[in-house]
Image 1 (cartoon, rainbow, N blue to C red):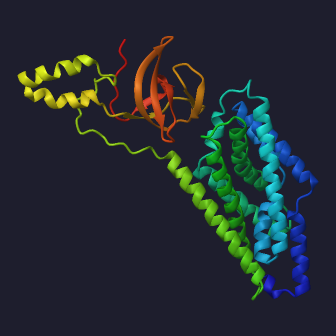
Image 2 (cartoon, rainbow, N blue to C red):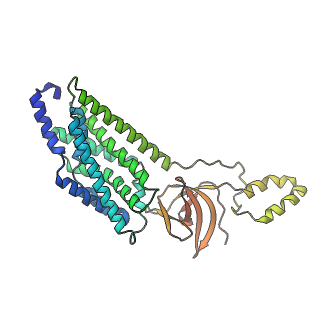
Image 3 (tube, rainbow, N blue to C red):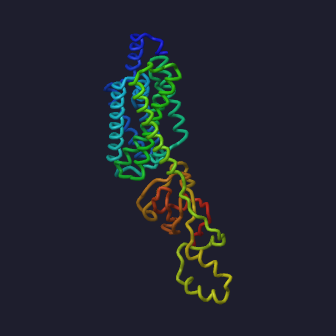
Length: 363
């Protein structure tokens, strides 16, 4: 434990660890190269390029170094590493944005980027495991584990790449979520490293006010980023609650009511009063709830019009509300839908599975 070492021994030990987590010029060069590859991967929806970007990425030692600086009480070292991480973020995001901007006329809609702009339990588990191994390897062997570093880079730089792509392609439905997930992953990497170092015996000296201040600042940053990222991601995946109609006898009604229904309303009211309650649901049908299915994991395009230009990419399981349709264009059926984020557009009927009854397309 650090508290059992003499002052000079403690300083020498921490100096060795600090040398491992301090970035060099190569660190920033690889950050830019990694951003370029990740931007290309998102632009052309190629997972292989995303993995290559994570493997090319620099060692994620500075992220664990933030935890080391906090627990050792060096405010100057903490701020220096924080600046290094900020430069890493800027370069990687700039590389991804440059790739997306240069290939905008050739690349399809970046569907894969949306998968890394929301919270995923598997991604978070991989991030936590990688951060724990990084901190353990640093403390035990004074080295950065390459595989764990690549895992952390994958979970940190991919949301960062999605942020750059969203800004370059002017996709307001992409970059805010990517920014929050980036903050969430960054802060939790530092927090997990801090906890692992504490378990392994790293303790600040008694009365070290600098260590206490840095630790409190780091915890506050972790709490803010984590809360914002988690809250936004959970809200993004939750379907919009809609009142379900109690009447169940209207599956065959069409969303576009014809004027003939209003002209016959008075006649049917006089002759058969028992049919009057069925006219109100027919005139104002509630939107049907649905989900995206059958894309094979590649996602589907939400378009401005049937077979028109894309608006956004939707993954399997995305919640929808069916607003209108069907429209048949070139022999294919399209439905007007609204996503949980409030985006409206047209989606191919092959990729829609309804949760509540929806009108059947008329030939």
